Length: 135
Ligand SMILES: [Zn+2]
Image (cartoon, rainbow, N blue to C red; front, side, top):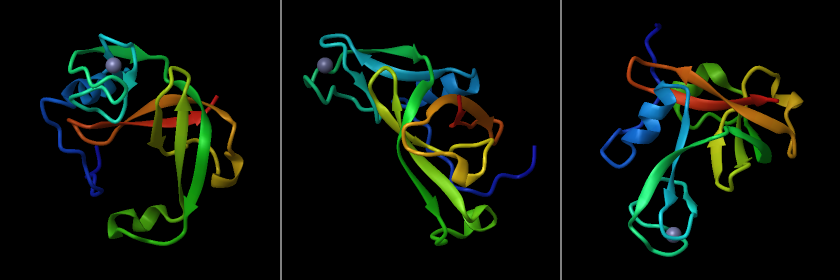
């Protein structure tokens, strides 16, 4: 595995199930045990009902592109070789929206409304990043 030089997440007790899931090719998020709301970003309380009780569930990893941009401006030297690169806000079928890159196609091939599915990119031994491809 080549050395990965981009920023990595800080894995802690709260988000560990998300990152462990990604390592196992599973997209996991918290579901509120009181109201059923799926929490994302990961949080210690439900943003819908303020409950602290949640379970980790597997999502389908399917959704559609809600918003989409291509970065031409370099904000972080670690991404220098990727310019231009895309970042999408994906509307997951289960409700939450999450950011991710659309991979496996040219930047111009993805557009708002396109169906996507998650893919898992193991960038280090400990970190696998969920990304998306056109479905
Ligand atoms: Zn709730």
